[in-house]
Length: 125
Image (cartoon, rainbow, N blue to C red; front, side):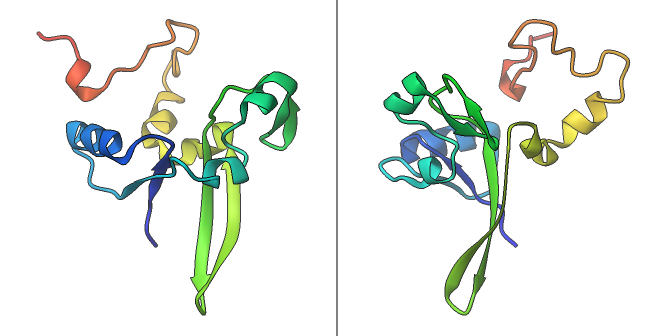
């Protein structure tokens, strides 16, 4: 099994961010392809105006991109799409959420939208 992250962003920007975070997993760019659109996690301007399917339901005005996770299997040279999940379904990759969910204040999602910080954004002591 290989975990590969995909984003619609220039590959060089992804590489810089991955290096900044100290990550080592493969991260690819789907910029200029239909990949994220084909899997219902990115939306054309028309879909953003008129609505689209996301997470197996209609959304009136989806944001340009949303989170999604898919699994594929390669067998006898054929790639098979085995699974997809969206929205909170992708949280299985975020181990810290499971720990926050059992604390008294949980994720504190009622607080400011930027409640989390990247490791290099923590306030200096």
